[in-house]
Each structure stands twice: as C-alpha cells, then as structure tokens.
Image 1 (cartoon, helix red, strand yellow):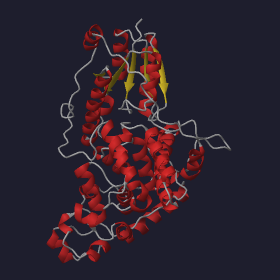
Image 2: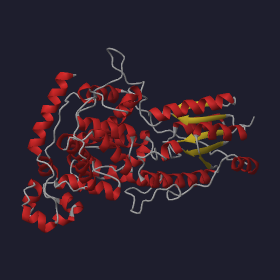
Image 3: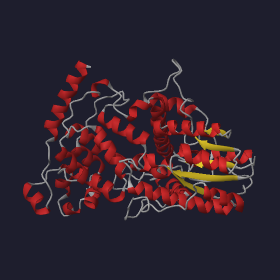
Image 4: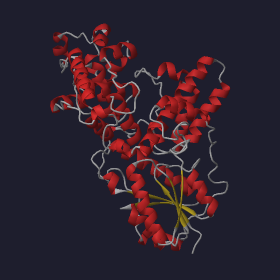
Length: 479
C-alpha cells in the first residue's frame, strides 16, 4: 500500500488553516486534494447560479494553490459514495480524510462514503473545521442538552477558549506521480468544468472575487475599516458596513479560526469601549452562524418544517400572485422591492433587508416561509441551509425564539434604516426623483406611482397584521 492520503474538500475550499488537511499531512508527505461535483446537490431545484459560479471560481483558485505547493486538486463528478471509494482503491490510498458537516444530507452522504471506503479497507479520519466549537461541545449545564435559545448559547460559547489558526503545511506535500495521475484519469478524474458547463449561467459580477486570497484581502479591509463601526453601521443597507464574507465562510474559502483571530487582534488593539462593542457585535454574529449550525445538527427536522407547534399546520394564504410580486420586487412597498431587486441582480441581500422581506412575506402576505426560504436558496451566492433556514424561521416566528411573534412595519424599518432613501433609490430607480419624505414614509400618491410606473401596495399592512395575529392566536390555542 502507498502512503498516499486523499483529502476530500467540501466546505473548506482553501489550503491554509485547514484542520483536516493538516491532519492528512501529519499522516503522510504525499497528500492530494479531491472535490466531487455531486449531482444530489447540483440537480436540486434550489441551486443559485451565482453560488455555483462562485464555487467553481474558488475551485479554480484552489487548484492553483495546490500546484504552487507541488500537489494536485483532482475533480470527480458523480455519486460520492461510489466515485470516492473507486478512486481511492485504484490509487491504493492509505486513507481518506475530510472535515465534518452539520447538514442532514452531508451526514448521510458521509456515512455512505465511509462504508464504501471501509469495505475496501481504506482508513478514514474526520475533523471538525467549519466551526470554532463542534455541535457537541456547547451544551446546557443543567441538562447537558443542545441549546435552543441564542443568548444562553452565546454566553456559554463566548466563554470557551478558541483555537488559533492552524499551520496546515509546515512542509509542503508531494502530489501524484505520472503513473498515479494516469490511473486517476482512468478512474473518474475530469477537468474542472465551468458553471455554464454544469448548466448555471450568471452574467453579473460576483460581490466577492472567488478564492482564498480574495477572502483574506476582504477580511483585512473589513477589519481595518468597517469592523470598528460595525454595530453602528451594520443595519443600514445603503452603507458598506458588513463584511460580505458570508459566501467565503459558506464554502470555507477562509478559515473560521483565521476570522476569529482577526477579531481578537482588533479587540486587543482597540482603545475605546465603543470600538470594543462594535467588535463584539460582529463576534456575536459569528456565534449566530454557529448557533444555527448546531441547531441543524441536533434538530435535523428543521430542514423539513417549523420548530414551533402553532406553525406545524398554519393556514397560510399562499396567494401565488402576491408571491410573484414579492419575488420580482413589485409589492408597492419600496424597501421590500429594493431588497428583492438587490437579491435578483447581485445574488446577495443585506441582512437587515433579509429580515424585512421575510417578515413581509410571512406576516403581511401570509405566505409559507418555506416558499421564501427556497427562493432565497435559488438566488443567494451565500445560500447556506442552516443560516437560511434559521433566519427564515426566526422571521416567520416558527423557530427557536423566546419572542415568538415579531412583526416588522416596512415603513418604520425604512425610516429607521434608510432615512434618506439612498438604498431604495439605488435599487428602485423609478422612484429616485421622489421627495425623500414621501419615499421613506411610503406615502406616495397614486398620481406619482402612476407617473413612475410603480405599483400600489398589494396589501394593507395594518389589516394584514391584525389578520395574522388573529390566525396565530387561533393556532396557538388549538396546538
């Protein structure tokens, strides 16, 4: 048997600060990366062209990184449970190593791959890499159970020491020999296809350049500038106040330990309570990411439906015309329409706006949150099951939430977070000439709406709010 170790990349498309890759290098000097284009993921009906385009770009950059260190990233296409054991057997690999995932499909897929490798007497080793703390690590002190509420989770999570970034390769590995490369090509290895080759067309610019170096540069830029004002600026969608690293974190193009270390450095160098509060606010957002992932790991049923009983048989109205108006950004509510058009055009939406449009879909239009959850996944460059599902269930009041009925007023949200109408004017340009007060209060006359070719509101917020509360109370009593 050779000393070859295969490292299976999934949500860790980087070389540096990669726990599984470091583990593989400890086992052998010959380490080769593999990535499997999985039809079970790519052929689903909720895959965003922007997301696939970004992923392929990240894989192109990762292949270059492997070449620089003297190894290779091999590309497979097909069922991982068959393709990976077949390749590993053909290459007489000593072991296959990968980093674990929280999602139900990934857990099941990994079990199948493990069984296939064990049947060939090929060793397997797995690590937790995409989280600062594995899902099993943070549990309630009283009942040793997973947390269902964020605030106590944060208190426990924040007190635990965090690992520092890992030096993945103290010494560079070697790659496949010519003979091994020939065997690999005979056993399923293909050239990396383009997103278009896979059937995904994204013609706009990506919000973040793909690859590890681009993500590191974005992190540096954010920490040098916006991080110190994060808590003050993050809710204003017209400002560049967020990190925009969500896609990089979704695909693991940057290590979470690397990200956390930058916040620690910023905290150590900060000279005011104000700066420290801003840094802590972003640290809390990183913890939200981990809270939602541990929730998906411990409660996989979240993927399929609501957590809270009153929503398990909720009488949603599900008006398809209203849903299409929401999707297209034609609801007559400027902040909602601006956000949806941003999503449709660039494959990303500001987090405050994600809450606004999700609340509007569920509480104003009374449409099942799962319709919106799926539409987001069909568009978002950073679409992630745990974060998207957690956010939608939070907005719909169907998830793990100590304050179950939360209703946003689109006008109030606009006045608070887009007071000059800058964000609305950017994404709903037909309204750009309107008076600011009319724009942000939503008091746009029918005459102006007609002149701008902008629709009347498709529902009345006050009436819908009353109806939703009534429906909710009925469901609550019945459940």
